[in-house]
Length: 192
Length: 228
Image (cartoon, rainbow over all chains, first blue to last red):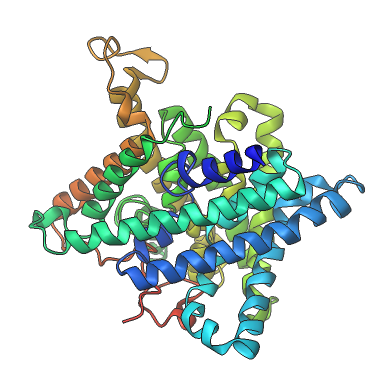
């Protein structure tokens, strides 16, 4: 149990996917303007990362490794993720329209989010068991959501700041991200 | 003929400065920030990406009349992922040190928006020769941006550059520059400098680099997922 907590919290805080591993920077910068959209994107990514792990882990260990095809990981994983995102979108649209309405716009953007492929590959690289992989994916997703939500607060403040003309837009956002990243460095060494 | 050559030259040079994928179009931010703790890694990542971009642009361009429009996104993804696997094997075999330092980010070239964007925007609509030049130009622009980032971070953050020790800094380097926070900071400053030099209005607030070439543009309604 303790080991699970360490995996969960280190994926969330010390090895935060966005601020320490630089995965999913595009949605981090693009969809963090408002709290609502940050929360929606975070929830959608957490959900897809979890589902992708549940699907890719058995494929890797059950089909690819026994047949000596482990080098096909990248090709198969990205295809599975793309198909899966499409599937989730269709299922949500049919069965839970309310949830689809709040997550719908973010789902297609997730295929090209490196956090999803990244966590699927990391779980394999780290030789995690199935349960450990699931815990790690949840931590990665929650960490992504946490970073997006915190950053949406920072950006709200920035709207009222007097920023020099050349720094307006993306440069100012990146420098704010740098400061948020410094604050996450405070977590390092917590679980070593 | 002269006009044609000029056109081809433009395809090549546009990627290096005017439409630089990282500094102007703001694509492929993840590898830009992640691997540039050293200038050498920046070059390695840039060249690996250029290889994948070249391969995928050639194949997509050759198959542009064969691939049905409806399944083009999965097809492009499979083509790109195949080339990523290939470069992974090549690096593991011939440059194992680079393979180790790029780590998982080598696999993540698959989801680099530059490659997908060029396949969707350029290679699927153009002949093979312009596509090759486009890939080389974009790849070179990406490599240069990564080299610049890597050089700044390595010199200030560790007092070294490409194996040389920089006197004065090496005794007391600012470690923060090779940490994640320094990556965000240096990229922000470089983009601001490019804005200033180009004397243009800052790009719109869109982390994904705009909707041109984005596979999801039709679904997200053109506002980067921000519901207004």
